[in-house]
Amino acid sequence: MGCGVATKLQWPIVTELTTAPVPLSAAPIAAPRAPGEAPAGVTHPKTIKSFVRRAGRTTTGQAKAFEDLGPRFVLPYTAAPLDANVAFGRSAPLVLEIGFGMGEATAHIARVRQGDNFLCCEVHEPGVGALLKRIGEQELTNIRILQHDAVEVIDHMLPEGSLDGVHIFFPDPWHKTKHNKRRLIQSPLVAKLAARLKPGGYLHCATDWQPYAEQILQVLSTEPLLQNTASGFAPQPDYRPLTKFENRGLRLGHGVWDVVFVRRT
Image 1 (cartoon, rainbow, N blue to C red):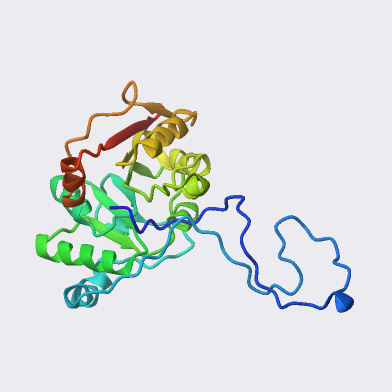
Image 2 (cartoon, one colour):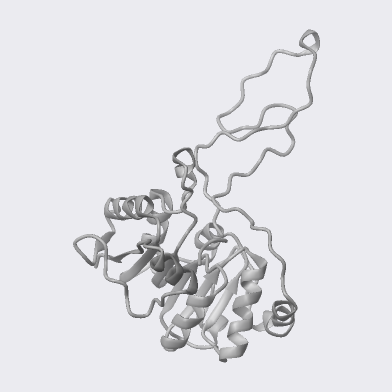
């Protein structure tokens, strides 16, 4: 779950820029430039992303699922508001999932909550193929996939007040302290999500890394549009299953923390 999170955030991170070496004697005096502008001679500065495209091989079954089911269940990204009723062929509560990994929990939740529509963002191609395969095997009709950067989807395809729920399960914890700034759950993203929730809509995060769980709880607690459903961490909602990965962690003594907030009315 969540290892291929499809997001791109503009954090104040200094990236490495590659330029050709210039002899000191020939180097011109640099002209002042605007904040964020690339130095002269740097044609393509790096784009900062909060996800890493993981290496992985698409299996024959996943490739067949792409071919057979992709045209129906994978939506094209367009920088225009999504008409969910058209995309799903019905009117139903809309839940956004960011980073579904291999889709095990996503398929389970869609099966037990058939009255809801699930819009799922993931950049990891084998993961998309695996979820498409599950959709075919379980005859699910209430999932649509966007294989695209989730923040661009939020910014351009999801108007404010359009979501009934958001799921972010097991995002990359970026364990090293110096990498914590790359974590997905940060105030700018939470503010975007809160604005797109309907009053009473919920944001549900889960992680198996306690320091990240504590950060998530703190970040969501400081968003004025959101209210905690518990006094701290929430009980695991009955719709979220224990995946094989999670069960293995629990057997090893690892914890799992759920955080559930709702949009204030």
